[in-house]
Length: 290
Image (spheres, rainbow, N blue to C red):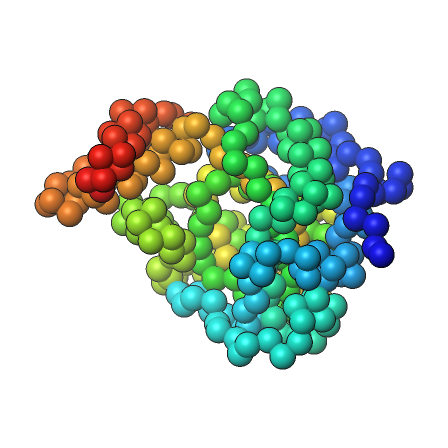
């Protein structure tokens, strides 16, 4: 039986060197930036280990899409898998698939890796936005030339490139790339894909990520992603903050108010707090009025 315990001494060192932690602190919470990491050779992040993880996870947290996507559209659907998901991961080089393992921290060895890595960043996170809340882990296993369409995430994220090359194209969290309507739609429906205009293609900040590179992505920064000519493996550790949760509630409240013909103003940009709107939304929810 495969040992799912701790990594060996060779791969069990810290993910980030001290100078990278200092660089992260200089960026956090609102400026994206590239970092270097030591996880590319970690035994939990080989294709075989990831195939094994995919087979052990709750199937609801294992998503498999066709690799050929385009901006302005959702992820392309794929026919039901003809083989176990682990075999798709093992053959990702030729599978023409995009596999996402969501909430990988449900597996204890990956939870330990997440806690250790976010723990390195925690002093800077606490100084910028307080306690890192709702810590989560995601793995992205992509066939060559996969495109992840234009979208955003309501969380802070450090993405670690493990294998292959990935181009990550980032945009500031302002119009025209993201609007109050987009944020309210997400908090109403869960749809985080963003409208696309071909003029956006050259307006983002393109960062090329090779194995050993990482990227800090601040809260709600729109982005799309292109995989190079080799299969790609990326690991994301994400977290939220009290101010982030309050901003989420503010967008939910604003969406509710618009149903009555009102035009509420935008929530305060992070890391500013939105406690009044958050309290109001939670009260409405408790009273089952929203």
